[in-house]
Amino acid sequence: MAILPIITAPSPKLKAISGEVERVDDDVRRLLDDMLETMYAAPGIGLTAIQVGVPRRAIVIDLGREAQPAGPLFLVNPEIAWSSEELLEREEGCLSLPDQYADVIRPSEVKIGYLDYDNVRREIHADQILSTCIQHEMDHLDGILFVDRLSAVKRNIIVRKLAKARRQARYATA
Ligand code: NI
Image (cartoon, rainbow, N blue to C red; front, side):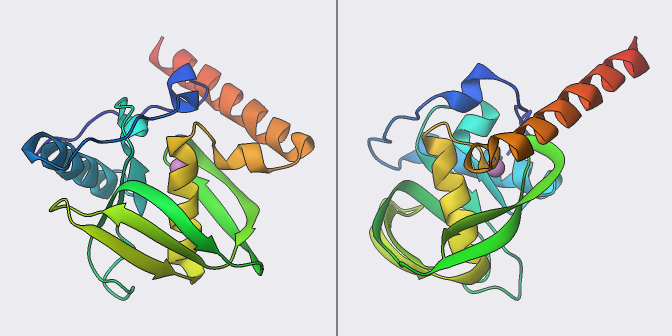
């Protein structure tokens, strides 16, 4: 396994629409393993392939030991089969937007069809933080960041903060 560099915003790559995975074979499993190790090292609770520069519809999630399901969840070619009309507002962050957090409103529950680590088609019904996390990661597959779901005013504040942090990092290493 390997820890891969995570792409941070702004980057045109993060706006790419990822392509379907043909089947979950050993190459895809190697990618999923690397993504999981990268996510644990960050640390984070979710990561998509495009965030490590691979435009494929693959997601890894691990909400920790207390969560249901416990342990890592691998979602390949996920599709929303159903989403609740009820909405939920929850604070989100993103490994591609370091140190930035904002409240995002999404459907509170979703049902997802996907291929698992063994290329088996499965369904999962998610609520609470898992629902938020899955929807956040699925947005990445279509080039959408959580800041794109905020008002222009809130988004601009975060974009300016990121640009400032990036300038300061450059000076620090110059
Ligand atoms: Ni993210």
